[in-house]
Picture: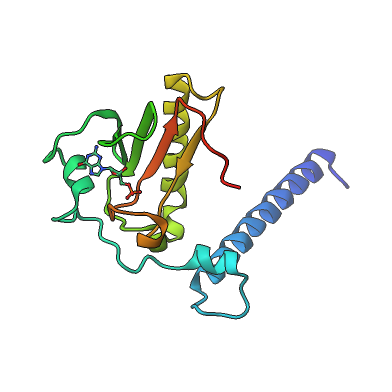
Length: 174
Ligand code: DGP
């Protein structure tokens, strides 16, 4: 005979198995994408960019890097925020009433050196700048976030940093 309680249980169990299989399939899919080696014509520029592995990375502090020294408290700075992963301090040569640099503690020279492992770290960098803008009361009027990359992009310190600029009217780029 068909026991309705038993059928419900079987239905729920089948649903769980299907969910589990879907999850495994998703993991395998993302693994397959990550395993793809570059360059590959099969991937769009955006995906290739995301998959690119960081070529010059060191999780150690770089000896001759000013921002590593600030992160390691070997050089002084006007620190406005710090946690395990990030440090934020006022720029030594401010270009606006608020000019804060938000910096990952690990040494990543440029945006070109970012890999998919850094997605969360860079997201936190932006969220940290957002929180600082709010704390300074410049979020409503607006502010500018800048990441310079290499000499051509105006980068002078080769340890990734996000500029938070605000407190004055920024000129439009266009
Ligand atoms: P960039 O041009 O994007 O690499 O910006 C580097 C910024 O770093 C620049 O605005 C000046 C700032 N800076 C350079 N050296 C120091 C330092 O020793 N302390 C602080 N607080 N800022 C620095």
